[in-house]
Image 1 (tube, rainbow, N blue to C red):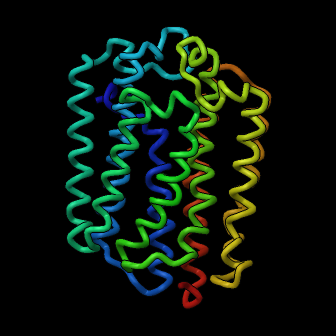
Image 2: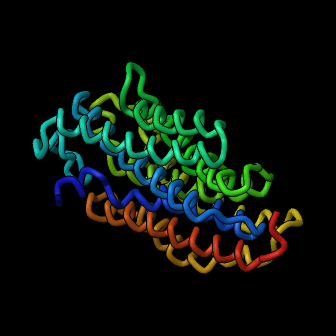
Image 3: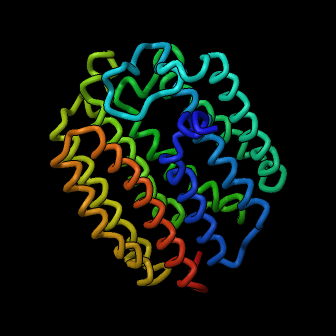
Length: 295
């Protein structure tokens, strides 16, 4: 069980949970809430994230990207902790559970979600799998922003209301930036081993110092865009509530800027995930506090 927990990379799961909370809170602010749809969306997002992590573990091992000298936690396939076929089977099973959640959501919210679900699973597989994995071409952060920001927040709202207001897309921006920042820390940590393995992540392309600046910019962008819906005339000043997490963000920026050792960056990765979750819980609470001013 401990090995499978390692394989699932639980530190990354806040990226799956956080956008569902924000999208659902926006729906509740507009007086729409389907509890079962919320649970299905939440579980579906988690299963897609775990399936993506397992697929990444399997594919990176096959391509030789996870070597013994990497600074991150051990990968179960490359480390010989689990047979590759078992990891691949677990990937299929996990994505299958996500499909079951998706079937329910399609039944209650409409066939539009078929394309969203299929694209989400395909993006998870092609991150490090397939003939031209986009994670090896420096596009990982872009796809994380889109799928764990825009798609997840707007989709979670849609399954409740069957509409897509502009507020959902604006609120998705800080969520997506923080989700992408988790990947940035991961890629800063692995920059040298990724370069040797031919994995041209955004960190490899930009270099360590500029990637550190990108991380700081993403966190700053999240705080600047969080109250944007209020500035544009919707919801309320409660959207400033996530700024309470700013001290944690500042500490993380300092850590990523100054440290290069594996333990420090591993801790920064985990804490960035927790930052995103805390930020989004407060953002969701702020949306709910706005009450009748929702869309």
